Length: 313
Image 1 (tube, rainbow, N blue to C red):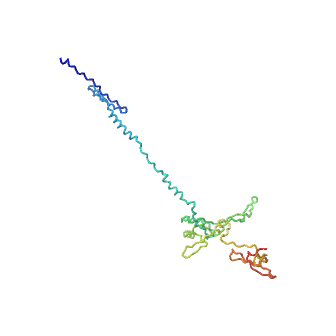
Image 2: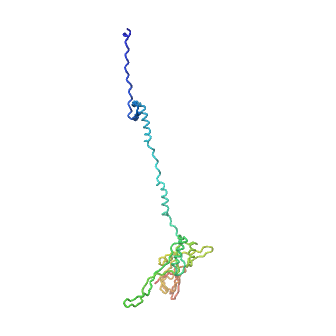
Image 3: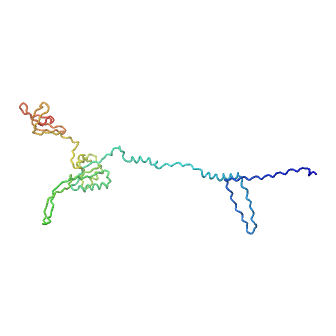
């Protein structure tokens, strides 16, 4: 029979099913879905078959999606520029503060205050001084005023003191030396001030004040007093007499009228005579003249010489 004689085709070998791709370790495991609860009174809940794992490609994309936001968060921020310190702003102020006062090499400010003598009522010097200072404060003229002085000097006087004897009870008087202060210039006060019209008004408007000493009146000008010389100010403040340096020194000679002198030079050199007269020069810086009586050829002759031409014998 044909069926027996015809050989049968060999059966195909079974093909193995494709293996599932290995799960990626870094891929997050899918969250398990809650099992549905069967309603009461019904049959058993259906069995849910879990779906196969997602292929590796999907897992890789999921990892990329999760990791990208993390990379953005961890991205380092750009460094901020440092702000300028406040010290840098304050630095320019330091030189201005340092130069606020006078420069070390700058010349001192000119002192315009001078000393003046003021005539006042005698015996009221202290009260008048207090009144002037009070008016200066009221008018706001402190910048024009310095000191106001009333010079005193000490003197020792004898004073009778009453003494009582304790034993006898009798009273006797004894003299005792007492040191007291006395005003050197009665009726005057001395003020250091910068003279102007406001100062003149304050001084003149004070009760008991006469006027400035040595006041100069000029036409169409404010009356201006003459300030005290420096040597007079020193004498007034210290109580020690100070000579006027501007005054020329007087030439002194070591002989006087009636002394024997010898002529040092000239035609009468080595002649001796007697001083008859000393004639002072008009200029104190010049030497005085000397009249000398000489004996010449048996006759007495009076001849005039400069004081520098003769010397005492």
